[in-house]
Image (cartoon, rainbow, N blue to C red; front, side):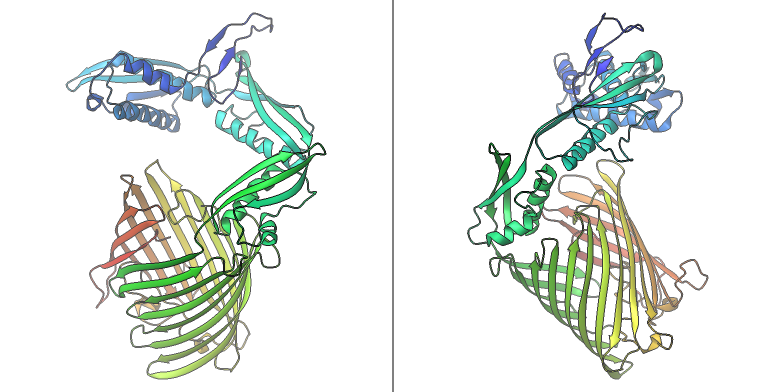
Length: 608
């Protein structure tokens, strides 16, 4: 057989002697044709369609995962019929569903599968049952590339010899191969296709990738249209393109992303033209966003009460995408104001310099803090997902603890790394994020012993279905002495660790959980969260969540002296174009004397 794995497939069945006798058949008809066939048969109402259950599908040999995937295919098929208000008779429904399952099994490598059905009369009407004999799962017999010579990395292809002949994996290998060819050549013309020659007697197939590559080229001039108010040299540096460099489409894709990341443009389009000398003129057509924005936000939680945020920003202050932000945040126990200046493309395109000057006033419990900080940080983007940060900060704090005032004057040196595989979304549905950081803190006045702050965090987002996402988070914050003689009791109280509140353990008041549940701060904090996020309609969602945290002076989360406090609750989400509006109601699972029965949180974006 000869087939491709990307649409309507033509299959050639060869004899064992590989002679010229060929039978051609269309095996992979799009599902929509099955729906169209059904439309000509019945005009019954969709609500008459019976539901499909796991027990209605038997897979031989037994494979529960495969059974579940087939069940999903049939549910999706019946949902599509309900959407157009059709309910075909059982025999016609079975014909469409068998075609759907055959197409899906072929894409997974089960080319010899046989599907039988029977109709059972029940009190509620007719019920379909299926028996699926999968047969052997075809394997890759060989992998061949035609049209170009390459140095292939060790991890390509994923569908190598002996691996399952899976359509999704082969298409992913084709996409990866195109990137490899693009990296190793300078081809203006580049296209790839593939074919799979099935050998039924060997229960396998030969995979061949055809590469059409030509017109070796170099980057020529780079032009920008629609950005007269923005410095062209800055835009060119942001693209990362250089005249005379090897022409790679991956570089052009990244250039578009880089221009969007300046947040100056609503639309970025590129066009290419090649001259006879092999130089490619790259033109970017740009539509600018309004550079000035006024923003306001409002939130609520039980112990902080009403919260208000106000801000103004200019994203093109001096025609090089310099970004000036002025903001303030007002809550019952915390008021703050800041001025942030962001300089993208600092020294080179991958660097962003951020200077943040902030002042805050906090009154947790019976304590009081006045804090001023000036922090300069360079974020260096190693890739679209990896960012390294380093910088320098000065912080002065006046703190009243147990009725006594202390003043701290500190120099801080932050270092951090962050990976974001969820596209930086405020409503992530898949991927993972993790970060690690270390910040050294030195006193200029001798009021504090030197120490450093360590952070380690991980969060993951797993789609259980199209409507359900499982979100998890684990974080560790820690304080450590920088010298042998340093005492962590002699550090600012505002730097010591406490848990509780909307960003920690929902259900407990803000920063109310200390060592053994008291208000005594600690040097080690472990916390984690689990959320089940369900989207029930285009605009509404529900969340079940649980948070837990421990504060102590022991870094080991499994030690017996760790005292854990947990909260749980339910949340409502309203999805806007920008981010979901979050409303959470949580209760403490281990309430202490004085703890409220529940806490209410209203904010923007998911909890993490």
